[in-house]
Image (cartoon, rainbow, N blue to C red):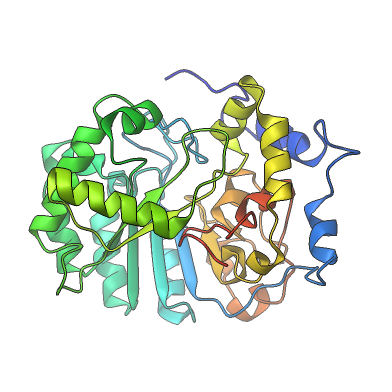
Length: 349
């Protein structure tokens, strides 16, 4: 796979370079800092609320190489959560106040201990179990064909990426053949009851813009997706989440290479909405990296911005201490507070 312009996201020197671009870049004397912006509405420092979601990244390995991926995931990524770290996570799951476990990647299903971990976490009593699937993993290899049945058995809430209801726009963002595999995977999920009225099996889709612009109205997009997928492929799903692309990793590379970085940052700042700050995901979520380090969100994880606490690793987890911290912010946070806001659960305002 071709290396990104700013090199690998897990390379400390290049991660630092990304931070420098975000913090200083070409806007040093022009754009207001995110910290000053939230000070204007008396929301600084940003502090956590009650912990509701434990988001665990099971590894950066993925069967796709998507242009906008903030994780810089791909088939050649070797970072995978070990069983030892999973056991540490399970210890935390049993005692945390969080009611939702959110498994992400890369493609989390590619972790060799994925199914074991899901089964053990289910025994621990998690109420809402989310797996963020790229859909095509279900069709990538015969060993994944039964994932819909596995998800159903454990009442997993499946959140799946789907750039568009047309083949051209989907394949342009995610690679040739992705659309057809995604449609087949959605039909397989429908066949076992996911996204079907009258069942409790939740299937939500995620939309990310394909270029240097903000997503449109989430409800309008959901209506368009539902109409097109039903008419063309008889596919149904529950909800669509519209997520703003944050200027980090591959998307930052793209913005710089296409000379859209300046305009995109201005667009984010101009669309800043103080109401969205109230419910950004970092206020009710802890993000755990594949190697067990703790972050305010998975975007900070990609920038190696660990939590501002003496508790920094899952092995030393103490929720009451973690809750007493200031959330680490930077210019990329404008992406979560633009317009109706953005989080892993879609709009927030």
